[in-house]
Length: 155
Length: 173
Image (cartoon, rainbow over all chains, first blue to last red):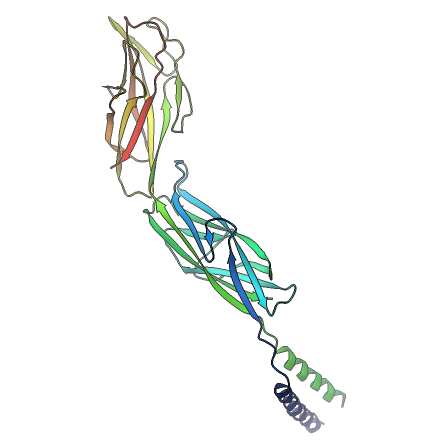
């Protein structure tokens, strides 16, 4: 009985392999699924994949030891070839970290490790997210730059 | 035979499932800006019935004042031979943000010429509307500096309003 079973498995694998090989030869491969991530302006200060917060000045209240700047921006995930529906996991981390500020997206503080921003982002539509930059009043003035790395994976 | 079929189905299912994979994409969003240094000045306290303390625009109402009347709230009244003086203090705080400066200079200047016979003083120095008077050149950020405030009224001064404004200016050193 064991021999019969083993023989059946070997035959089926060989047959399957031959079947798939035949298909590869006969039918063109469907285009590989591709997912694109695009940043969309929802405010005047957003230009493509750059958000310029302009001049960041402390509000002047002596009971606040930090300056917080908020900015909305949009993300659109598109799957090619286009299919209706579907969702993706959206994660983000700091690619380049300016130690003078903290960066949060949708209330989630970003660091070197990828953090989950949204587990189910609908594909093909623009979802709005809130960027928040917090600058302590103790850090010196000067230009600021942070790079946020984004990663999307279809569910 | 049944076992053989089951195994074949399992193998086929595994083969199909292993061909499905999630699509992944990545991108970078760059955030830029310029942190600008700043200082802020607030009036924390003052004699009289004061409103707007804790802001940069406070108002003190002294009501009706006279040599032989009572002193306004928060003031003392000293009667001299030919004049009388209302005395109090003004608390001014200067805060800094994103600035490496360690101290500041604070000046004061009257918003308009004082009424005839009326003298305004801060820290013992007479104020004018034409030039700023330095109150301190080593002010400490984040703490309230208290400055003596005197209004000296000559007995010869006409009965009239003494309204005026003291404009403070803080400059980081």
